[in-house]
Length: 390
Image (tube, rainbow, N blue to C red; front, side):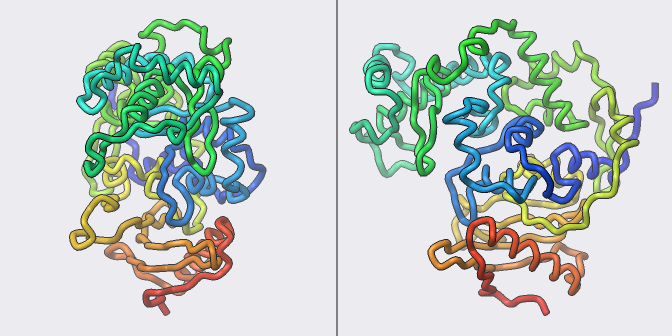
């Protein structure tokens, strides 16, 4: 059977549609539904305008506000925090399929040099007993100091122990206050009905890979693996052999092709594609659409890297630069920073992509998006500190 060929235009539209960016971000807001459809939302501490998780949710529905996420975690217990490719919030209903990831992370942490000694239960018993007696505690409730505080990833012993138990699923994030994580015993956070469900390793892997492909629409083996980062390359390859997903050929932005796999309903998905909203969007660097840089470049021809950890003198763009998506095309990137105290959204730099003419209409769209982003973070004044296009 000849593999279905998906054109580059179809591939871009499928990707944006499956990730909630095909239509204008308006209408009734259901925060949990957005997270459930995406699979997870990455958490990040950095707040240049708004933290990544808030920005990602706002991009899908601009009625979202920053105070709306924590109740799902702290009060309703509809989401939990754990590690996909990074720290993320995940629908609580996925917990039975996430047990293998707790075990994988515990094994990985036990082998990591900077977690040395944390696999010893006695080393963790005192912390767990304090939490059992006192309730949820943050790292600030402990007083141990890092042995080498000047080293970038140095951690105090109590922080290592807390992290180890969080990765292993012994502790869970109970709530956050000013983004500080409070840990509690897993049995106090995870609902018993979900915590006690028993699925085989194969069943969990099968669900994770199917769920990844469903959200990706089409994907290579590596993209399926990277979606959750909850399986090895060997495990993902074995799943493909067993599940036998539909083979497809994807046309890339440069005209080359990539062999991949697709969901069984891919024909229906293609048939139901509609025009992508022409709105210009300022996306977060950690947005699900952009976080897989290889896929992003292949589908859109948009080369994007985060340069936060690159020395300032060696940066090509800037410290925290946002991709600009217009319709189904990335047209540029922008560096903006919010000064919430005086209600100002500062535009530091703007770059258009090669071959993109920065027209008056495009600038009008950007101005509208800057105003929307500003209102999101209570910054009603937009100030250009770089040259604004005429």
